[in-house]
Length: 205
Image (cartoon, rainbow, N blue to C red; front, side, top):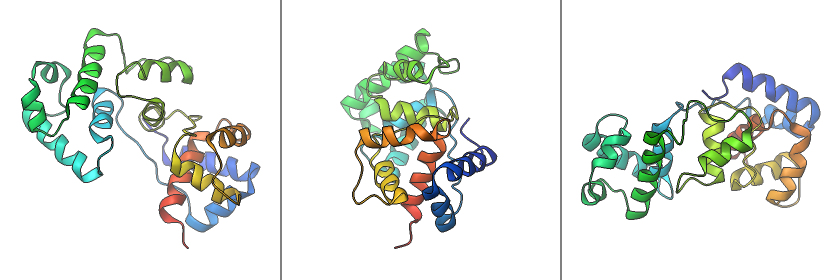
């Protein structure tokens, strides 16, 4: 499961000790809330369903899928459903391809979401073997569902924007720049990302 409140607070205190910008951000917006998702197939399938649509639209599609396939949209039931039935739920041809890729890998045992490699880059590589799961989605899964402390989604636009603000930079830093800057934040980069999203959503103008 994701980083809990106690772990987040400890990591944020450690970050504030090495980067004054985090201390100032904590004073402005307080500690972030945990972002925790269940480990496993359902969370990754929800990620695919939610790609490039609003939270509300994704929830509506998920609700229709569960009405068709049952709670959790089991992999075997998804694979047994035809194209038109899934399309009627709001799942596009492309997303059906992604969902079927995930279901097949899970059912075959090629992807075991309950024993991913311990090394973060190896775990990311295992997840991006699923069609439609890119590096960002893999990183978010490892951070929210597995609570891996040092995941750093440097390609996330909000993370780039808020790291720039937190550090007082004149413009949004590049992915390369924030990867370099964040080396000093190991092994707490996951908390830094969660703080960046928290700061993005609550910054007082």
